Length: 430
Image (tube, rainbow, N blue to C red; front, side, top):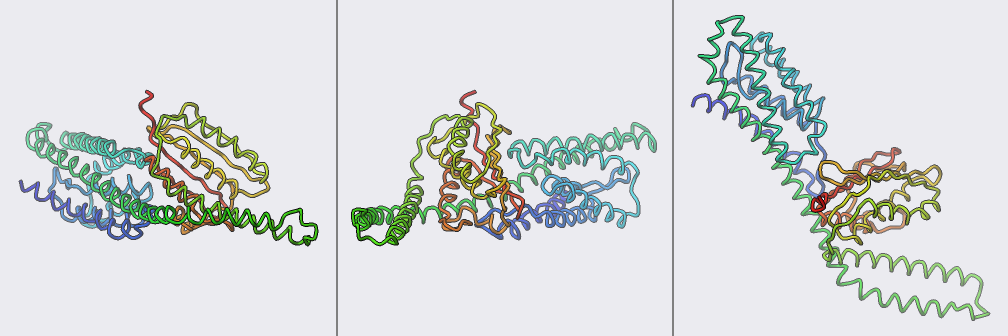
């Protein structure tokens, strides 16, 4: 029971920084889900591990036991290689300062059981929460296994073989059990705070879309009809039958009509937002739909001197509304074409299946965007175009969200942009 109380102290050292990270970073910008702050992860993991080392649960054969390696595992899984390595080095320094030296077996075992989290890191963010919890159990079991082997070797060298089996087996068993339980609890806590932050970000975005949708429904129809009447009378006033019409009037006519058409396009965009609640869900072949959209946009790409390359896996199916998904694809391809340079412009379209997700990639070699610009994408009225309302991406974000999908932008100035769209796979066709 005393050991369990000591383990609870270690748990407070581990869980408090997790919720502090949520308070300081994930709640900082509720309108947009922020990127991982690797510096904060490194600092918090190092502090947590150092506190666990300074207040150990106990020792087995002069080897301090506890949960000090859990923050290091979390730093690797959620922060990456550098965060994990830096946190591990800091914990080694703290242990050396506190205890002067540590058993050579620790130098052998530690790299081995940290090697396994390093293997999981690459695809960790792609795993579902149940899979992450399962892999957490495996990581805990592997750590316990290597400690058993290491301590058994030490017992053979320094004690009688029966010592470790008779005196320390139960203590080792409960230490491993506690380690697995609290590692899984820590992973669950991280996923919990991440889901809350993402949900809050989506809620803010949904509220903005609702406001724009209500505005569209109340205004668009009333404005559209007068514009249609005005356009008709403008055409009559500048009729070509009038032989005394000055030549400049033709330019005025084209300018007025083009601006009226632009106003009509804006109203249409508002109406598209207002109609987002109406979906006709069916099984659709996303591969064929993407190829069709690419063909439709080829003439526009040629006009801009931009080439389109495709690499699309066949028979990728999702559940969705064909018309609205087509609208998403055309809008993203159009944006990529307009972002690409008019000379040597290149668009690449990829589609594949990854971990029960259908992934679409829209890649251009345009001027790119800054981090602050990407954070505002999808907001009503925000656009990077000279003539635009930003409502196209607002509609795109809304459609993807209503299909339980995600959209991510990766870009930097003068390095092009990659748009990643993911939809759940249609499992009913299996």
